[in-house]
Length: 207
Length: 176
Image 1 (cartoon, chains in turn orange, green):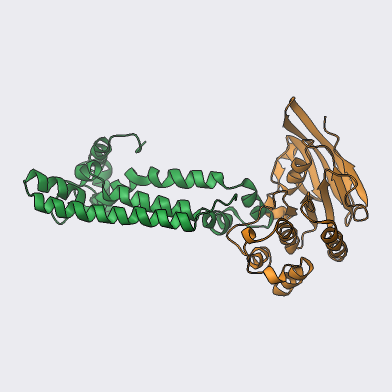
Image 2: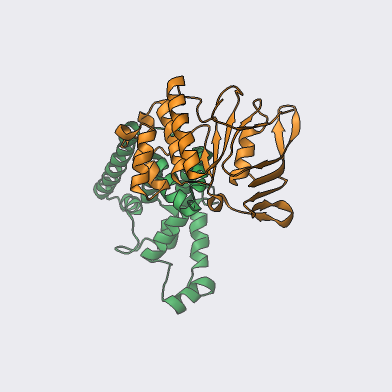
């Protein structure tokens, strides 16, 4: 069980706004997080990953406290080890597809398996600049999953994929999520997207 | 500070600071038997201090230009700040790193004021090429001055061209 109760000041065009979220996520659940641009969806994910610290808040994961601002507890992103798929992919320009996965995991068999489900096995020694947008996005997803995280945070992870590739990949990912018992939060700006993959919804309304 | 300070002023202060008669210079001489004044070691130390900003400036701005998410992605994979720096950030600023190294080297090669102050132009010990040029001209030995100058000119010319070619062929912004 993941319990989150946070308050974070956001800088918005119209001045300051507060992002307030109090929510619980059951282990193994897949939640779609949606809301308008600027509502704080990405900020919310980064707060969970430990990349942004909120003004006030508590995050507990299976009774381990990741964050408690009143006790000044704050686990580093390295210790939280959430799988994070960045909206801009954040691929490393100096590494090939294979090296990206090796950077995240030492398990050669697991890496091979990931390459196959991402359909990147023939591109293993290509660097990101030689990949298409869709291929880059798949690599970003695979790299995040490579560490076998308990909690996977995905920021608009399917935006650059065509419909066919998207549905094939989602099917494969759903199997993986079940197998690894991952709790998943997927940010999207389009509530209709991801129907069938997610079981829960969290709306961040924005102001 | 070394960037805006006149070289001779920096050299003078270093000369005073490392003077073996008192303070730091005396302590260094007594405990480690190192004398920085009028020695080659001192010349190297002074050049490092003087040229440091030329190295740090470009590297810092190159690091700042990398998207923040690169380091963040590495952290979420469980990698420490040091490992992230060595395996992700540094390799992606290679062109800036090379440019900084070469330009700093070229800058140090031509250094005059600091080196003259702390080194004192002692033949075979602290006389560097740029001072030798000045010395030869002072002694009306234009032939020697010409040779020294030509050597310095060639070295720097080759370095600048090499960096230019490297950056033209290899450098690609990570944002492209």
